[in-house]
Image (cartoon, rainbow, N blue to C red):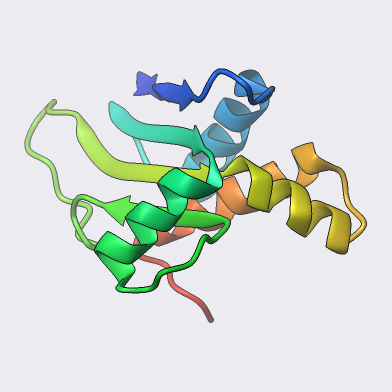
Length: 128
């Protein structure tokens, strides 16, 4: 696979396995035969930030575990050797912890699941 750029922004108080997030993104790209160069950004934020994003983009005044912002809304077109910018995945770490606890799973496993879910949205694959 060609160059894949995955900037990950993490609010400092959250301990996140960046390598694992990157590995999950690479796995999804490979499964869907997406050839690079590709860029996907990931942000791990708190509930307050997520609530603000949810309100602004979804019109809902509540926190949520994940939001995906596709830059192409499902069109995976790019010209020549230009970078295919898929978009951004934003996760609320406190919500991920609550969800993992409720579902009796490891936080890292929940992060993997949500990263994969967010990636599918960025690729234009919705809820089946």
